[in-house]
Amino acid sequence: MPNIDILYLFQGIATLVASDPTIAIARIVLIGLGILFVFLGVKGTLEPLIMIPMGVGMASVNAGVLFLSASTMGTIFIDPMATDVTKLMEVLQIDFLQPIYTFTFSNGLIACLVFMGIGVITDIGYMLIAPFRSMVIAVCAELGTVLTFPIAVAMGLNYKEAASIAMVGGADGPMVLYTSLMLCKDLFVPITIVAYLYLSLCYAGYPYLIRLLIPKELRGIKMDLTKIPNVSKTEKIAFAIITNTVLCLLFPVAAPLFMSFFLGVIIKESEVTRVIDFLENTLLFGSTFFLGLLLGVLCEANTILNPKVVILLVLGITALLLSGIGGVLGGYLVYFATGKKYNPVIGIAGVSCVPTTAKVAQKEVFAINKRAMIIPYAMGANISGVITSAILAAIYVTLLR
Image (cartoon, rainbow, N blue to C red; front, side, top):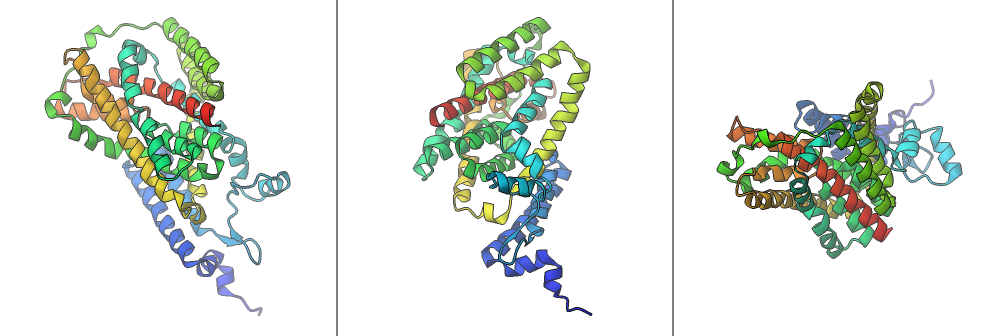
């Protein structure tokens, strides 16, 4: 019988024993967090489409560390730092998620695919119900995206890093991914992970912000739905193609994002059934699933132990909090401008986590007044938020790239 080293046989445990204690503890914590995310996703506390694959990936990648050589430990999931052609060809043949990462994630393509799917489930007509009000709220809801930048610089980040983490305030995951890939590839993994962790908390956190900032009597204001204009398909398509063209002309660096979103919108309004079904189901859910899985397996102990991650965690929650406050202030602004006939809760929907913040707004209003329906106006602010966050991402990338 040959001698069998039990630890060598069970290499995940062996690498845990052989690791620096800090790394070992971080791995254990991340495994626990991954399992927790799965349960919170299953319960619906966090967004299941992102958090279930992300949690499984996080637990698996931190458990499945092995000896790649006599002196090197790693995984066979992904090598995000492989850029040399020879090295990249090697890992493409070994790491099982490397092809998906290399060809859809590291170049921002997955953000465009998700945006295309979001476009096809978005009714741009909601924005055209009250475009000026929607855009006012959306601009106010970018407060976190703007103010977090100087705060981040003051905390020691450079301009590119500060802009990337500030984009978390836009509450638009693909936008954060795209911006961080363009501006600071060395930190795009933790920034994107922070973004999606916090975006899942929009369900849980923003209701408390609404209750804190808006009294009950204002939360229950009933909107007049009889004055909603009928927006034709022609008007929606014309708005989409003209807006797309203008934004691409002004901000070419974000043209792939603009094109993806508005293409989805136009396909929806054109009623191309087979393409709609593909974009709405296969593409959107497939891309979001793999986005969550890739974020999970990128969440290795070595990555998370970067000293800047703590700063990113603080700044990410600051950006989302400020944007939520800005959105509510925008709601109040429209409330007073309309002679107190506008429900200020709609302001939170200006934070462009489509359609999460619009649903949160409606849920909080419904809890006070069962007859108050604000979802058409909330979706208008939500869609406007997507556009304003894309514009800000383009401005940051254009100025700092």
